[in-house]
Length: 180
Image 1 (cartoon, rainbow, N blue to C red):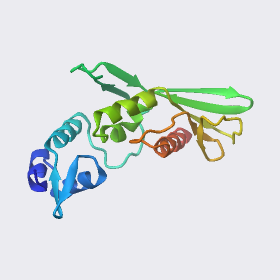
Image 2 (image 1 turned 180 degrees about the horizontal axis):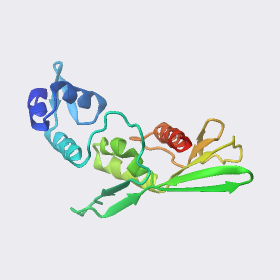
Image 3 (image 1 turned 90 degrees about the horizontal axis):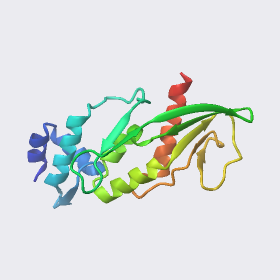
Image 4 (image 1 turned 90 degrees about the vertical axis):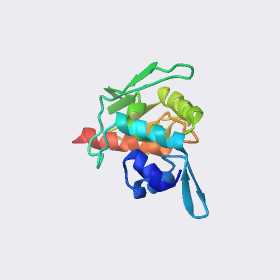
């Protein structure tokens, strides 16, 4: 379908449809300079929009968020992930650990149009955590990705659809929010 029909169906502007297509939020192909929108992908995006209210600017993360999804073969939601945060002292450092990262990355996850890639990313995130430290750390092994001299770290290794940098950006956002 063309951008005008897609905009009418989604109840958004044509410019929004073009932006979604450019950013990969919906599956679309450009043919002869015009976007051709995949109707199944658009329907999925409309469903996501109906489930989530759009925020103008992500001022604060909901650190109590949950994310529920259906695993393959089930039509009803079967898995629920809840964000969990804990803080502990170790060797004079204050470490804040965050597990259950998927609810905090909902917009990125829902933008993954390939179901296999989305489930792979959810699986990788389910085994990962973020650790924020109040001091520099050099005690981390090579299976951990870091930023800010080890103050921000994650065990997430990245997938084709969600790079490690996105999770480290989230770690920074969490650190800033908790510091307020």
